[in-house]
Length: 160
Image (tube, rainbow, N blue to C red; front, side):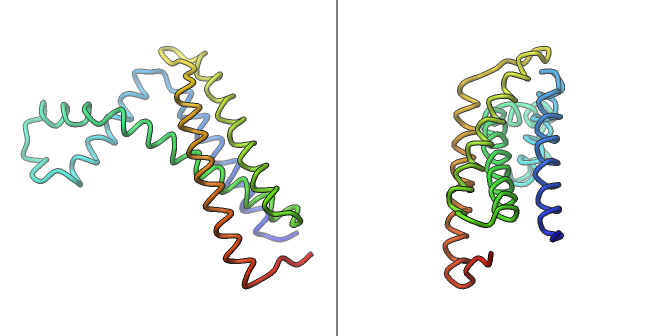
């Protein structure tokens, strides 16, 4: 058995576990985590952020909270789509573009089940808008994977 199959399978499962773990956080903890990311972004992109009063730093972090959360949704599902697709291609080899489509569908299904899971977490909800953002991220991941496959397979056709 090829090591790459095992590595990509484990990476895919690990990312699914991370997504589940993040979704298991109650709303107040999730907000804290997003706020920390907002503060980190502020330190990187806002000149003299560290010299600003703490209240202004907090205000900045809160002002970008929506974008932080939605970007995280899209990014994690983009990555999951890529990993899932690559894992399927490594295991099954034939019809890679159908496997990419299957990887996309599995990722969207996982997004749906994760949103349902969130509805049981205190202060969290199942939101159709998040499923749509997750699905857009998954679609971007599938397109990137397909593009990479086109380039790679043009130079190195799949061996059976």
